[in-house]
Amino acid sequence: MEKEKNSKITREEALRRLETARKLKREYVAKLEKEMKEEFKKRTGQEATYFEVW
Image 1 (tube, rainbow, N blue to C red):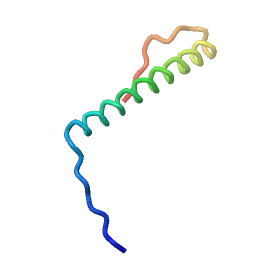
Image 2: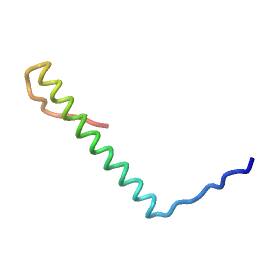
Image 3: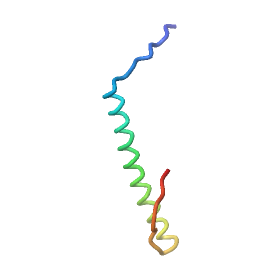
Image 4: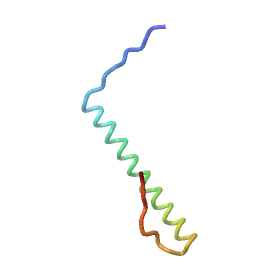
């Protein structure tokens, strides 16, 4: 079997990938926040005051 070469990516490609990952995370966190706040309100009858993400 032939060894696969480790190909280096350009700075621009790395930044594009990073920005894409950040965008996906922001979208997922927004969706999760909405669902969790709705669940909290349904469970307690109160509005959630904050939402924490690590």
